[in-house]
Amino acid sequence: MRTLTAARIGSELRRHPPPNTSAWRVKRRAWSQELAGESPQELIRLGQLLINAGLRGRLTAYELIAMHPGGIAGLTPAAIRRLASGLCDWPGVDTFGCLIAGPAWREGRLGARQINSWARSQDRWQRRLALTCTVALNVRARGGRGDAARTLRVCRQLVVDRDDMVVKALSWALRALIRWDRAAVRQFIRDHEGQLAARIKREVGNKLRSGRKN
Image 1 (cartoon, rainbow, N blue to C red):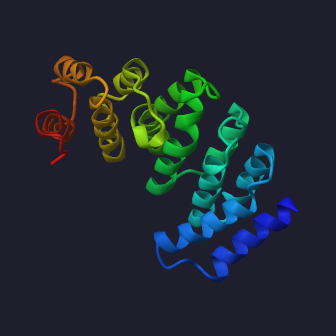
Image 2: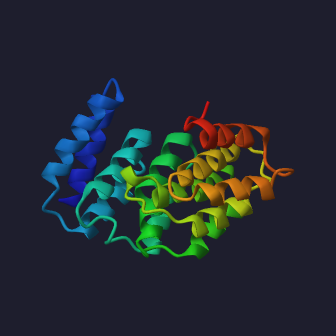
Image 3: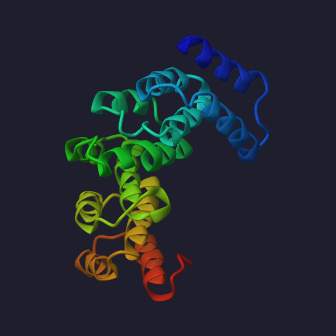
């Protein structure tokens, strides 16, 4: 039944692609309701099949797992690595970091070693992923409760990175932490003044002063 369900979802996404994000989310919520009685392990196996069904399939997989009551608690490091396979675009990376890997790290389902491995990767998307995972530590809407130590540990590893995707993610990570520890973010900017990209200093500085990125 698991394979048939994955095939049905993938087929639906291909034959009747939702015209926009709102329409797609209506479908995803309906699938979540239908799968609510499945075990977390079944949902995770379903997700591992769906990541091969294009970007919509990948995003559907991540949301189905994240919105299942036991989805995050059912994850293992190996399952998380399989779900991350093939990540190579902005929407996929950010959704995976905010909904899957970041919450798993926050809740002790994923160790710092994996986050550090992504931060040291030659792949720009894995480096962005390491930073995106910190958002789940700090954004209340994502379940964050504030964690300056872990957030800044990742940020320090990427402070001199000039890849545009990484620069934007580092700015995002620091801005998300301001709500919980404004002083730590301000000190981080001071300590790395000569290393940080101008965009980061501008956006984070604006957020510290006015509460807005721009």
